[in-house]
Image 1 (cartoon, rainbow, N blue to C red):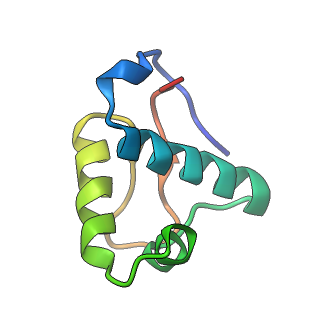
Image 2: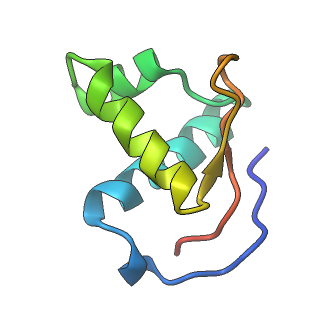
Image 3: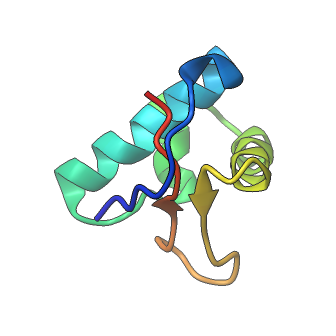
Amino acid sequence: MVEVHQMTTKSELTDTQVKYLEFIARYIKENGYAPTLRDFLEGFNYTSTNGVQEMLDRLQQLGYIKRDPNKARTLVITKEWK
């Protein structure tokens, strides 16, 4: 389930950050659980998890997502970006 706690404007985020949030929301809606790093690789046609990890770290720093780095599929959206 996507948790939304706070409103913000889309202009505060880069296009790539918005794409990540849209991917997360869509993935959770379609599957009922959060994507793993490998799911991001498939969804964005990437070959390395490094860029994905950096983007998720940044979105977490900005307060848009929350996750437990020691567990898979714990990612939740904590801020509305639309």
